[in-house]
Each structure stands twice: as structure tokens, then as C-alpha cells.
Length: 286
Image (cartoon, rainbow, N blue to C red; front, top):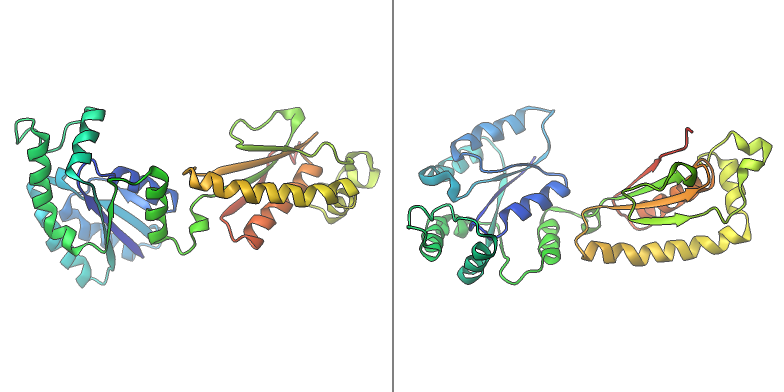
């Protein structure tokens, strides 16, 4: 069981860090009261139905109860629950600018009569002990969102390629292009197995159909070009910080050619490239 305690300065990017952790499979709880941490950890340890990866956010919003976090961390250590602390930081100037841009109030602004500078200084002093204990510190002062995303994901993923899940989807143009598709490829240019009597009732999941689709010179020329293009584009989408990528491949009815090619792309990305890939066939049963 992997437990991450996320904390840090208000406005530094804890919410973005949690979004990234959720994208890579963590169960996340925001603004958890520190005294509840042992009960939460015990639930994770005992229940087989709970997620194996969890992250909790505890920060200055807890008020005076924030100091209870240290006692809670001692408790979960005693019960055998290992955890890591991720501290999100930023310079005072950056934090002030972010609050001005978003017009949000600092959690301590009421206590310091609306002075953002005084509130940040007070918060930094309260968080100083937990910052010294942190396993990971990320300063977001000059980090671009995509770099921040990769930085967080790289800490908790064995394979950074798993950060952006990819879905390979087959579909039939006669039923419409998938609205959520990022990349759409049309393989209606290839000979259609639908007009072969012994193949008509089969699908692209069946070997005779796959052999028929791939045996033509048109397909043999298309395959390397298609895979090269996808291999080139996937890292670009990842660098842009895209949370998921949907590659849609269409033929007329979505049963034969598109299914065969979707399976081909799926195997290439998952087996050859080691990426986090799923495959689905929207119209295969129509």
C-alpha cells in the first residue's frame, strides 16, 4: 500500500498535484483532518477492497489542528503503514501574484486583516517542520504545467510512459466519428472483407479477416507510415500535458478493417513501446 501525504504552501499547486496523482491511479482525499489519518490508514491496510495507492492533502486549512499531523504520522508508522511526504512550494512573490490573478483569499487572510504577504509568511513558519521532513519537495515558482506534471508523475510511476493512458478505438463512419477522438484515421481506402462471403460475418478480431486486410500492398505500405506517425505524435501530446489520448480508426461499418488496425496499433503501443494502452471496438456488434 502506497500512501502519500501532500502538503505545502497555499497557492503553490497542491490541487494540481492531486489531479496528477488521480490521473496515475491514486485515490485522493483533499483537506483531511489530521486526527483522521490513522483511521484512514488502518482502513487501507485492513480492507482488500480499498485502493493500493492513496494520497491525502493536509495543509493550513486545518487551522490549529495541523499540529496533530505529527502525532498521526507517528501512529501510522507504529501500525506499519509506510508513507511519503510530498511538499509543494513556491516563492512568496509567485504566490502573491497567483492570489492577485485569481482573486482568491489566502486561508489565513482573515487573521492578518487581508495582508497576503503576512499570511504567506505565517503559513511558511507553520509548515517549516513538515517541510524539513518531506521526502520530495517541488518548487513550482518557474515550472510549466507540463513539467510539473511529469515531475510529480515520475516520483510515483515506475514507467513514465504510463502517465498518459491511450485508448485505441475502432468505429464505423456510417455511425459517426467518435466525438472524443483526438486522432482519427480512415482505412476505407483498403479492400473490404465485407464483400467476401466467408469473411462477411466475421470481424477484425478473427485471424482470416486480419490476414485478408493485411495481405494487400496498400496495407503493407500504410502500416509502417501509420505507426511512425503515431510514435511521433504520442510524445508530443504527453509533453503538452494531455491527460489521455484517444486514437480512433474507422472503416465503413466498424467491424473488419478498423478493428484489425486498432488491434495492430494497440499491440504496437503496449507490447513494443510499453505504454498504458486500452483497446475498444465501438461498432463491432452492429
